[in-house]
Image (cartoon, rainbow, N blue to C red; front, top):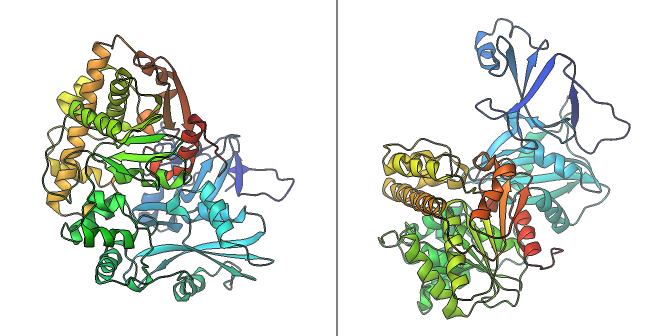
Length: 554
């Protein structure tokens, strides 16, 4: 049973299991038993002399837990059911049990990771996080903690948000002098779960929807977001209440196109959206969708291009993470990508860039920052090139989750429609229909909730994904075969997450972008996966502000 060894000379701030003992091998793996990157959470499995023969008189449990070691021929490994991650000093951190892993709003969450972060906060003596369920069966996280006295909820929220992605931050925090325990001395989670569902967490500044349109919208929000209608206020923000790009699509569909995805993006506050519906005087037009309070901020403008099959809403978390009154944030809603709107054809890169440049000029935007994510990097690079030719001040180009690669691989991807290292997901798309592509995407973290759309709209997302991937591959393959005579003068920052398999070769390949730009640097996130704009928006915002020479202490 002895597998790890850790020497402690003080009270630890996290549960460290230490280094493996001799003749024991420890992996932290994903569901396919593939080792995850350093710092990424996964299941702890063991190989070596510590592995027994199985469970006595329980062949089924033995079959599931004791497997052949794919990394050491002739050895067996044991799946512990524990979750953990490797620390940089080669020590193993325990995060919790596999049966404590839950799925909320499409995200897989390790409760232990949230609790470990909560316990490290100053003043917290003990803590537990439970999953509560509303009457409509939607789930949310609630944190209980013990301390000498109650702590400010806003402080707890801010500190957890600095370490955890938004979807792992509890919706409410409740103080107790001590947490209830079971007869075995463990935290009584059943009691806490029941208590969480009884507690009233309605905000003091709640203002009920007052007009018929506000009440109609509130009913639609309640259905889409899984929140009781009497808990939705007229000043509520759709995305702050848990809305995502796909739930915004579902809202537009539920309202029978009385609003579009662009409307929800530009007017996410319920009362504002109701005013738009009532007045119809400010229907958004063009491709640039404003995501910030100010359209003409003095700090400049950040223009964002989404990943394949994505939309402008993908950049809402980043826009919210940036301080108000700073950068004006715009995201591009690509033609044909709004599945809740009337049918519209997809557009080639040249046409999209031409319209975006025209809108930038018409709005008088200056000090431009561009962000392209994955396949959207092709649009960002070409937009920067066009703006440069027109003498527009492009301060920096951010290329997220994408490496330049080589022309051969990109040509092969175009011909075979194969998701390789430069596509959003690693999956074989050869010969698949749009419906089959959509089915593959629905299992990917960047397309959470896709399976909830009807077949026709899901197929449309698959078609958009195919179009965007092929367009980006073709653009970069052409550039690799015939590099431009004039490189981008604006500095380029390549932003990657260390645990994103699609950019695993970034340490030696990020400088490939020097083929297209004079100055290239790297910003590495510790984790966050391929869609780190959603999972690590605060870290991305700090990277953007640093490059824009804007204060990051907010």
